[in-house]
Image (tube, rainbow, N blue to C red; front, side, top):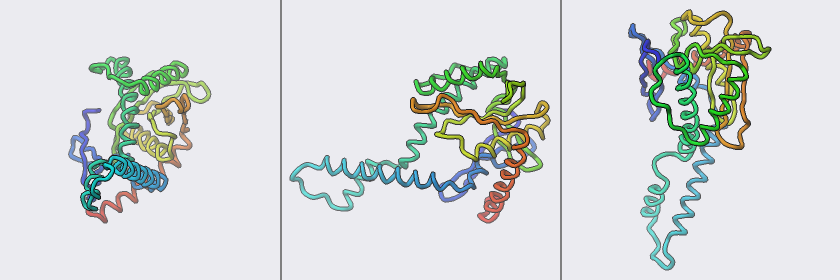
Length: 270
């Protein structure tokens, strides 16, 4: 992470926290990812509810199965308390996200470690990764050789004073573009099941900030790279974002930020 800003969190109430960045002059900006959290995700809500339902049904069935035959019937309050202990405090969907996130974090960390070495930075000890993350990294290596990727900036904080937001971009690099011509691109790594639309807005926001800070070299493309994390995943998924497309995506991001700012003021967050 860049030394130009410090990360922090802001209490949103109701057990919700958002990420912030404090710049050297004391300006505090909300993170791009927090801002994009304002966009509704109905499919994610349904998935979380169904996952929690399945966990409760399974835990309840197991508790029933474990109850000794012929034993005195358990009181309702005791049954609920025992069931809650088995389920645990963490929500079922969060457990699954944590597991998936660990794979993504491991692959991301190994990519970052190798890139920092190439840039002559001190990367520290090589990250230990599991087999799924090692597979994702292997696929990344195959892809980067094909596009002749050369890192320029990695894990740097970028911010826009004009739009008042900040974030940490994964990678800014030179590589072969869609037509095999050399281009410069802001690259975001993703390890979900797909490349979701919000990723396009995030990428456009980082490109805008990089340009505003004067760090972009010429015309900058956007690139979303989805790393495979399980055997059933496609080997690799890449989505290019042309400079023309970025205009529309950035307009959508600023609209999301306007809604985010409205909500923050309404809830007294600012």
